[in-house]
Structures are given as structure tokens and as C-alpha cells.
Length: 171
Image (cartoon, rainbow, N blue to C red; front, side, top):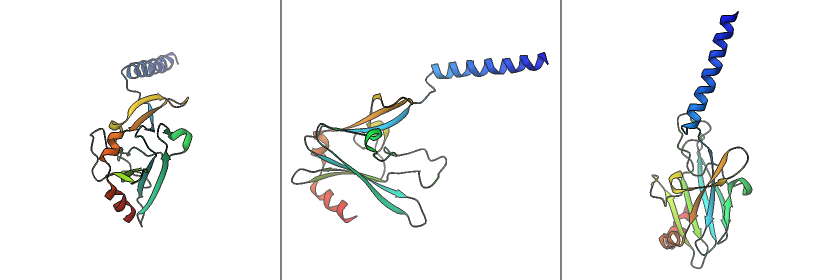
């Protein structure tokens, strides 16, 4: 019976030591929650066009408007959760892999201009779909989640085009 206790004790010590080493080496990955800061100078409507992989391939729009100087917080305003794009495609369940397929920023000044992110993801700091375009912000809740903020700037507005708004209305 004492050998069994020793083996059990060794297993516990090994588990605790392993956790301490891996946690201290940064193996713990915090939960990332998206937020969108609008510093563009005008109201922006952010739209995620999500393809749900079903037998009929359903497209749904998720959209919110953000006034200039405001921030859209996912946790407070129930914005769509899988933004930026979910790239973990090891196990595909209910079409969660690879969405959203398209993101749009509509600058609501007159004339309206749009910036569309579609097709292959670009890790250029501008494309709204990858986490690489977001900056680490503050803790979002008591569960270890941290806000990662995408900032919409006047440069985004300068890149936007009137004709992109027409093509997005056609889709």
C-alpha cells in the first residue's frame, strides 16, 4: 500500500511541476475578445458576412455602427464572436472553420465609402480578419479574457472607395 501512495505522490508532484514550468514559460494562452475603436472621424458601420457551412450554404450579416470616438466591445454589445477569423480548422463543427468570409467597413459620411476585406487574408496590419491586426488591450472580464483592439483610422477612410459600397449592395 505504501508503494501505491509513493507512486500517487510522485504523479501529483510531476503534474504540479509540469504546470508550473509550462505556465511560467508562457504556455497559457489568454482568451482573446475583439474590440473595435473608431478614430476615423465619422460613424462607421462594421459588417461581417458569415458563411455557415450547411447543405444550402447560408450567408448571414452581422452588423453594428460605431460613432467616431467610440469603441465597440464584444462583451458589452453582443457583437459577433468569431471575429477575427477563426483559423483553427483541425476539427470542423457546424461550419465554424473559416468564418467570417467577408468583412466590410462602411464610412457613413456623404458620399458613403466602403473598405472591403474579402478573399485571402492579408497579414498587413490593415486586414480586419486576422488577430495580427489587433493590439492587446485591457482585461475584459474575470475569466482571463483580454480585449484585442482593432483601430479604425482616417487612413482606413482614405483607402475606402464609393464603388465598393455599390458592389457590396449587389451581393
